[in-house]
Length: 261
Length: 248
Image (cartoon, one colour):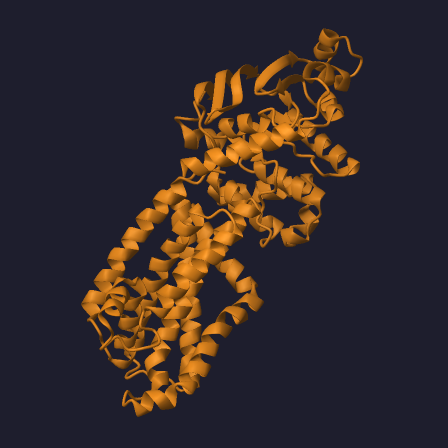
């Protein structure tokens, strides 16, 4: 469903993603783990057509998203790391707007919106402005919205960031349910090892722009001789803090952005 | 088409729902109208130019449309900040459609604002030479709105923070307003000033409005419409280009 071969992305001299390759099968839940600044979000941005790769080949559902941009966009849904809802509109209006942008016919739009809002327990609040929603509700709405056009692939970039354990738990239950009922392929990134361990079929660990290991949770544990995924993760990526690195990488991205303008 | 419509509708909904903002954004033109209109009125009359209120009302309408339309484009900063822009950029519609939907939405809001202020002018005592002039005036309101909504979109596409917004207000929007002849007659200006006012797109909009409403032309309807249409096309192209270059 997703095929990435030798993907590289450079911002000026800085290499954010360095020659990575991986495959995600149809119906699979695939998790991308890695410290801050490892290149996870950059990879998602490239897969979702928001950034162009410097080199390498990518394929989404048999399409090259750098060439068939619109067709590729129609096939995936995305929940960004930071919120992307229109706070000044109601939950239902947000869903409807999304449906129009994704060419979902009116009748189907209404059906899907109702079904998904009910599934994510937001139907009662469908006519409330999004600005009145809690963090967990906003996240649920974003996922519901991302699924409105029945995408074949769902990208989730740290969807549980800043949520309480209840909301996190509920969110993953929904995602698993969708994966089972609608056969949606899910590509996610997270910092919470327990989530990846629980939800993902396969995991890739990324650090400094490269994939340092990939396999099932059990395989990763075995490979590193650890008894938890967290232990495996730390064994693979070391225990030094990355905040500095992440910031300087971000700063570099900013500079690169400015120069391209 | 659906995408253009829904984004246009979104701008309109946002406008209608923010009642406080409607009042606030009408406050400033009202202040100009009352303070300057009545304050400078006697001086203007002594100079043998007739009623200042009559003279400046079309200018204040032009100003309202200018501010409102540029703001709508720059409001993209908020969408960028709150992430909604990304949702539209990753959708399977062309950037062109998104840009057109947003710009038309902003222009429509500006037209409504302009119409409201015209009504306020009428209440304050402004009288057009003929009621038949209203449709012509409306045409100019639409042209001004499209020109400056496109400019706003272009600016909004390259601005990254609120500091830039202040910069644009002080060094672009205010000069466009003050140098447009909205507040003073363009006849007998010093040479340099004459050149500058002729380079200001709003000059032609205000001239068109004033010509239509009180039949005082500096140029002519044909010149005003052609210049505005030309600049409109130019700004729309630049706006579309810059919008297509946005990276999030």
